[in-house]
Structures are given as structure tokens and as C-alpha cells.
Image (cartoon, rainbow over all chains, first blue to last red):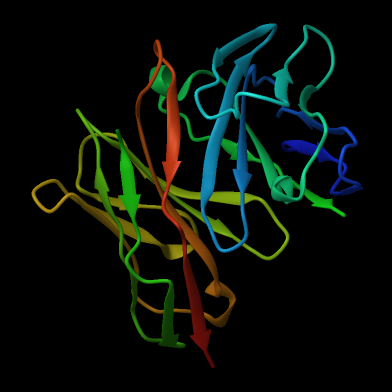
Length: 117
Length: 116
């Protein structure tokens, strides 16, 4: 009965390094969403993926950020050459279908807290 | 563009008293509205949603919310607050973005503190 699993829970990187955040959706869910939460703020949508496809990346920064959801394995959010401003909590959510088609709520993981030194 | 406003950063209420956490939204077309709760160092937990139908929606842990189309509001309510309800509450709205995808837009959150 596992929910959305994210790892690591905490990640520390130095400026200029790469950060890789992983998300395994709930069993039976094929839609994955990534959100970023800055301190004292709500969640901001970043990207929506289905298996092997990026459906909506309108919230992704134009540079250094990328996401994938391969046929096998977890979804990965990758941040290259991290900067201090990337420090945030990154949340993954999943749903069985698009929330536009099924009205199903998104189920969230516990997040990865990324700290940039 | 869609947006959500939670006008109160902080709400304090005594245990046993009714609570209300306010939310207003702006969206083109029919909104899908959600409430989530976040405990420290955890992800968001779904409380309830409004898609269509009855304006009063009942959800988890005794919470309910009333959809008011004329006031574009979706306030979260509970008749009798518990200390364990203390948490960060987020209102979210969903509407069509690209293709058939519906991304969630969140409010900035309201910290609810229930005092014993």
C-alpha cells in the first residue's frame, strides 16, 4: 500500500554540482507531476509527465532543469549546476489519469529537501 | 491565467470552536477545487475536492468546504476544531492548461493553530 515515494528525503549539494531527485508514483498511477515549494510559499507547478512523455513543462525553468519518466523506473528531476536559489522542497505527485479527464486528486510524496551550500 | 488567494497567513482558534480557512480563486471556465493539508516535513494530504454537484463538499477528518460561484470562494470549515488539526492548509484550483492536462495552482497556504 505504498504511496508516492521520493528519495532522497534530504539532499545537500555545493554550488555547481548536479542534483537528481527521484519519484516513484503510486502503484497503478501513470501520471507524474513535479512541484517546487520555496520557504513560506505555496507549491509551484513545474512539469507534468506520463511514461516516456513530457506533457506540460510550462513551469520548468528554461535552463539547467530537466525531467524524465522512463518506461521502467522512477521519474527523475535533474538540476544541473545548482545555485543557492535552487534550495527548496521538491514534491512529486501522481494520479491514475490526467486530472483533466478523471478528476482524481493528485497524491503527493513527502518531498526532497534540497539544500545548496 | 488561474490563481488562488488565501488571504490569511495564520488562523488561530480554540479547541472545540468552529474553524474557517478562506480561499478565493480566479479561473477561466469551470474550476476544479481542492484542499490539501501539510504537516511538518511531509507532503500534502488530500482533504476534499469540488468538481460539480452539491456546493457543500464533505471530506476527510470532519472537514467540509462550500463552493460559492458568485463569490468565487471555496472556504474550508470544521464545526469543532482539534489540536491535531494544527497544520498548513493549501487551497488549489485546476483548469485546462496545455492539451487536456490540468495543472494545480496552489494558494500560499494558511497556518492553522488550534489552541488547547
